[in-house]
Image 1 (spheres, one colour):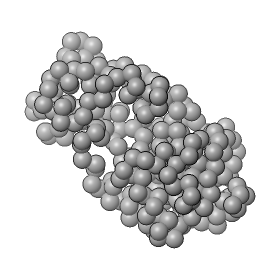
Image 2 (tube, one colour):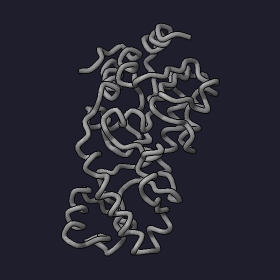
Image 3 (cartoon, helix red, strand yellow):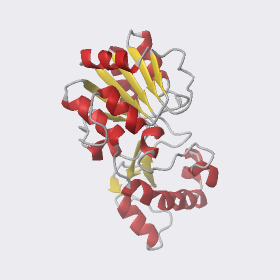
Length: 251
C-alpha cells in the first residue's frame, strides 16, 4: 500500500476516527513520559493507591507536576494537530481519541465535542471526593505558596491532576464512546502511539475487526504494524498533512 492509496481512502470517507499518542506532541516540545530520557526515567512513578494513602507521595507527585507543567502549558500545536483540524473542517472526522493529556488538540481548534481524552487532562486538578475542578495554574500557585499537597477548598478532599494514574480506573464513558465510534468508522488513523498501552491499544484492533482501514503513522514499530493497511514511519508534522490533504505547516 502507498501514501497515494491512503489519501484516496481518506478522500472517499466521511467517517474517520483519529487516535493520537505522545508522538504527535513531542514535535511540539512536550516531553515523552515513556522514552529512555522521558519523565519517568528521571522521576519515581507514583501509582494511584500510593497517592491516596501517603501525604509524602502526594507531595512528590505534585512536585513532579510543577516541574513538568511549564512545558505542557507553553507548548503550541504543530502541523500534525492542524491536519486533524482540516479533516474536521471537511466533514470527515467523527472523533479524535487521544492518550495525551496536554490539550493541544483543543488549543489547535479541534471541536471539544470530537475530542475523547482517554487519560484525562493536565490542565485541571480534580477533587477525588466531590469532583470539583480547578485550573492547574491555581493548584500550582497554592503549592508555590507552601501548600505542598493541596486539598479541595470546597470539601477538604484530595486534589489530584485530572489525569489517569497507574492503578486508577479509566473513565468509563470516554472508553465506551471511543470503542463504539472505533467500531463504526471506515478509516482508523493511529498517529504517534506505541500501541502498547491497554485498553487504548485495543481500539485500532476493534476498528480493523469491524472492517475499517487501519493507517499507522509512527516513528518506531508497533505491535499492530502487520495488521495495518498502511504504516508510515516519518515525522508526523510532515506526513500527516500530506496524508490528510492539508498543506504542511499551516491552517
